[in-house]
Amino acid sequence: MNIPFIYKLTGYLSIIVGIAATLCIYRIQYLYYGVMFSFLGFVCSVINVFLYTKYFNEQEKYPKGYLGMFLSSLPIIFLMLVIFKFKK
Image 1 (cartoon, rainbow, N blue to C red):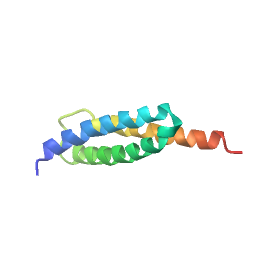
Image 2: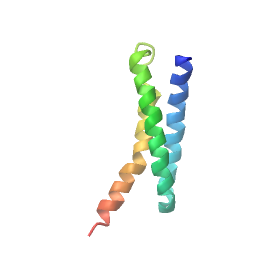
Image 3: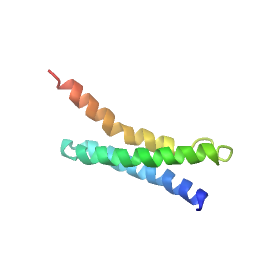
Image 4: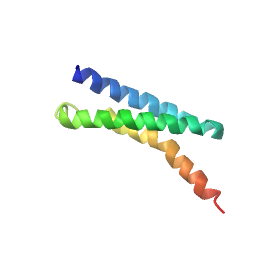
């Protein structure tokens, strides 16, 4: 298993999926897909941060998984705001 390749792949994949999840906030109809992208982004981010902690913590300042995790969390936060805003 090629650990550095998996680390780079999950880092960039978490950012790309996070951007796709964030773009799904644009329309409320796409929010369902945004939540699915968020789940995939969280999985890639967790794998990336785990590999960073175990193998690569001296090479980079911070992993790309943190940015991917932030971008993937935006649709979930937006969904929570919509639920609590329109709750009667």
